[in-house]
Image 1: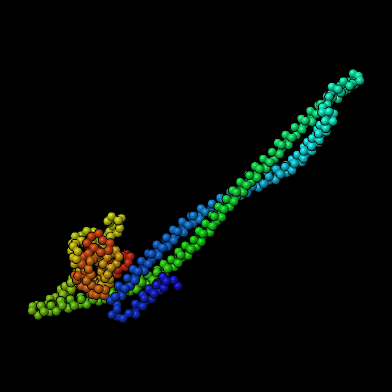
Image 2: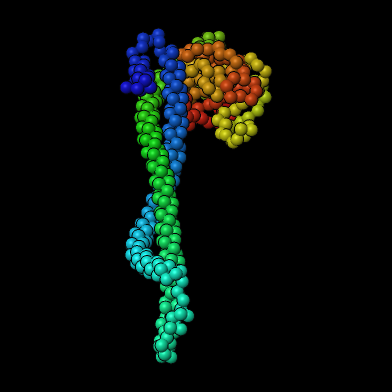
Length: 442
């Protein structure tokens, strides 16, 4: 089990164990429960923040992950397109190689013709050399026996001369064609090979980018799993704190009911004492004069009882803020009480008789005292916040008008004052039963 879960179990065990405390420990019971509740609520707030943070991180990672997946799809399309181009280039290279093979055959035929002509020209050169270095076509013509023989010899000479010229011309043309064909094939093949190499490099680059994106995708998915596990752990711990908080709420409600019952009995005892005192006084006066009518005694008792149920102002000073909405510079808020400002240490008194259910520091309230009252069978709670001193302790019985502390500026406060609340019903952390104190105090 995780350390935090152990803490939760220990806290819950401590709460349950409170029911077995000895009677002399009951005075501290509600204070301990409320402090424990504050700790659990603080832990719940921290866990909520942690859950929200994990949720935000998961959302951000998911957005990044979707972008990476989209990028991988784009790279896949580019890779497929590039591979198609590579295949086309390879097909062109293969076709060019076929053309090269055919051209080689043509080149071989040209080379054969050129070689034959070369041999013929060499033979002609040797014949010229054997004849003394030149062929004298005039001698051939002059050696004619007749005009007809001359014409024949003249035609033969022309044919020989033209044949030599044609051989030389064809030889030059074939050599030129051979050079052009060889250059064309070499250039075309080189261009195609370069184009293919460029496409292969592009594909390799795209493959590398895809691998990099795939690694990022894998890392982000692992991160998502880690965050999801951490969020699940936080949610489980939050549920544990919620269970503990619910148990604490029940214990606090039970303890407040117990204190309210004590306050009710104390109020009944006080009223009984007052009634007995009034009766004794009535009997004393009856002995000295005529007896008072029974109805008057009863009415006096009722009036006295009604008067004792009224809340009184808990301090003196300047009224600075009332119940309801207000804005003190930090934004609108709901103000669930009344504020009375005065100098530091101004006495703060109990608005009604009751039991001290909390005395200590409570976050934004600063130093605070909470009293539980039973008035005409109805449980009430009064809150005295921002004090600079506390004069009572949890479980103590206090009388109306008894000093419970001194005015101060502790907690979330903008100056020395008393923040006073009245709750119909016992105090609860949500302050859902707070009422406007103005109609209740005199």
